[in-house]
Length: 397
Image 1 (tube, rainbow, N blue to C red):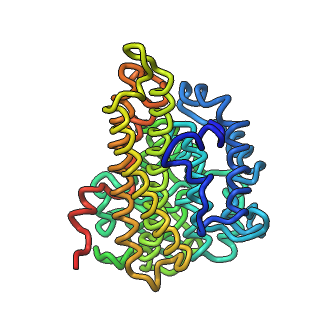
Image 2: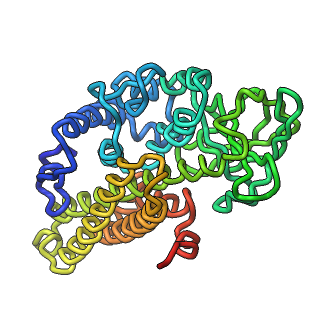
Image 3: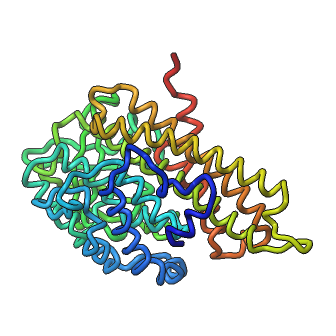
């Protein structure tokens, strides 16, 4: 889908519109990401779908195109775009370009480092940052291990323990739904180092060879594992940040993760509208293009209305997070990010349903674009904190 094709679609041709939040540098970044997507992913997307896996050489190719590690400093293996700092509008562009593949799993698999590495970059020691340079260069994978069999959204009550024993922690417990676990060399792991209290947990990283794991396939490309720890000895030097302050780091990470899920859902909703309008223009029913039907035009307008309002909220939250990346000063960021994720995933669900209705039977042919998009709807709504729980626990005035 070229830029010129997208510009012909009403309402969502925003990359052709003026916007004070985006600079010429953002346009050049979009071109660079689009080059990788068009040259590497697009010709092979069906193969990845069939094999349900992405080869490690694709991760490395993404790094070589300057896309994989643009958010990290060069001293740790990063490839900062035009030697300038990363911002959340670059993140939005990244999601939009990958969304053209109509496969949410491909982004989650390739960029799992975006939820496992930032804690190390922000709170870790210099030695730890150097260790994770292999992850940033796409030579190794680091997964995030927080969820457990009984605790997903209820992070404050995790049961995996780490008890001090001289120069080591002794870790016992299990972690579940660990994305890219089968490929991981490191697990950035939340453990309990004190009483069951939201402030008494800790982040450590654990080498792959220290434990045993069980494979559980959950999601396309995301070779998900359940990990079991039994008396695993982890060096104290693997402690990320300060002991017993892990919950603060988790909340920082959740803001980043939820914003990313919301941005991906918004980009996917946009693709639903683009694909639906293009198809409706081509499909002839009763001797006229389907797009001439008032019902179809109304569906498209409703999709556009929801997408545009969601996009405006996304830009607001992106700006807030640019101004306060750790969320230490602006206490509204956490709630705004969570509500944005809810809004984005509900918008995506609506647009996927309406696009499916416009496509008719073609929408659930296995492997079709709308089929792949619809597959992602519930995933976006559930992971990163289930939307119903967030609405229940939201802070009200």
